[in-house]
Image (cartoon, rainbow, N blue to C red; front, side):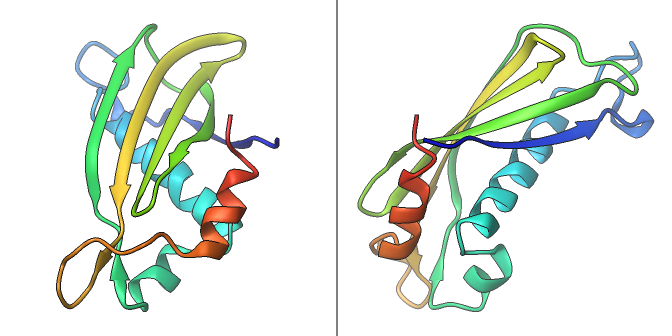
Length: 134
């Protein structure tokens, strides 16, 4: 099993008035890591947008454990929690050095672009994501 990781530095414009990264920005960083993982797995968002299916976000949640401050170097680890028939579920861990600062989870559903009904996760993507499963 391999892991997928991405890093970012907390920029000034993501801080709240208290000097802590505003909580909603956590989802932007989770999305960027999700998109990078999909790309590495052979299904970039550009490829998906040009296909016959959509992959909307169906659920998102997060837990904030420690504050993220200006210029903190944050490492995101993304795990495909499960790869279902038509849905993908991801877990995210946000670390500052060795400290776990936040966790998040997202669920995405594959839909036919025309009918908006669920379709199967493409088999090659399913197999590529299983290599990252925890």
